[in-house]
Image 1 (tube, rainbow, N blue to C red):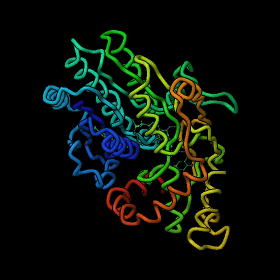
Image 2 (cartoon, helix red, strand yellow):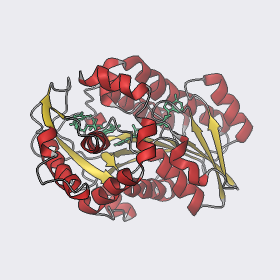
Image 3 (cartoon, protein in one colour):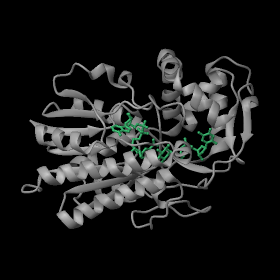
Image 4 (cartoon, rainbow, N blue to C red):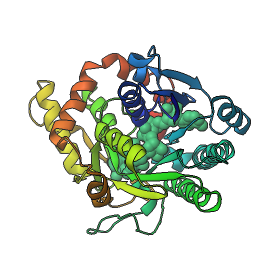
Length: 348
Ligand code: NAD
Ligand code: DAU
């Protein structure tokens, strides 16, 4: 039985990836390593906790001694690395935490994998999950390709860019078998309500202001999280060694247009008079270093591996909104306690 380590599997994207691998690959034993920071939540994966091919391990990827011991003990055959500090706004107020987890944490995993795989690298794989933000900002046109030069603008994207470089360096220097994907903005169930879509769904439910940064004319390329998990599955199994693949939704939206669409759907779902939620829109101070536009050219993964998104944005948004409306307890649990302090500091 192959032993696969997935890091960050209690977070948003990681929980969808862990579930997919546990359910679809009974021939693998999945080890989910997560520190359970504010963003990690065992409720996200409660449905698989008793599966026989699944083990949860609480631990910190920044702890080098712990990581080395874990790799020695389990002799993993593959690593799918998602654990990270992932929110741009938090990276602006606390950049050091991003260097620790995203750079040092990734280094520890790389080094431990290199050590246990020293003599048999061929059938092993270190899969690093990264972001399109490493490419910086696009103007009004053009797309990010796999050869676009790195040009990160936030402490978050700089830390992810740095980790990508270390993965490549381990590939070139030590022949570590690796693959990297750089994905655009995800949305879907279990998304922590500090990011645009779940934050605004929660605020609309609670009749709170919708804080649109700057003029709202920033553009993101949105992908449903299950489609990202499917791409990760495909790249892990079929992606070429030492390659990078961009993953995107073919689905660009200006923030303000997306927020207005969300407001319309929420008015219908909540039986509110049309226009009620739009009245909550409040233009607020812009994010420092705010990237104008991200958009992915996903033709490489499409042509080489046959991947493309399976749901339209309208379908994905409907599934997402219904999930939040049907999971009031999840939403209440994650927005109590420390969330309130974060919210006060960020928005007032
Ligand atoms: P998330 O913030 O929802 O989850 C991160 C998880 O990592 C949490 O469960 C957290 O507890 C865990 N974690 C954090 N620090 C840790 C540490 N030191 N040791 C062990 N575990 C730790 O993030 P997400 O949105 O699911 O993103 C997952 C990955 O995908 C990240 O690497 C992110 O950069 C990348 N990514 C995210 C998006 C997106 O739109 N959310 C898009 C592209 C790429
Ligand atoms: O592109 C991939 C990245 O997408 C991932 O690597 C990151 O982990 C993920 O957080 C996301 O980053 P963004 O900064 O694009 O996502 P966020 O949801 O924070 O913001 C989306 C857009 O909405 C961005 O232009 C900022 C804007 N925004 C965000 C918040 C939280 C607002 O206008 N108001 C807000 O309150």
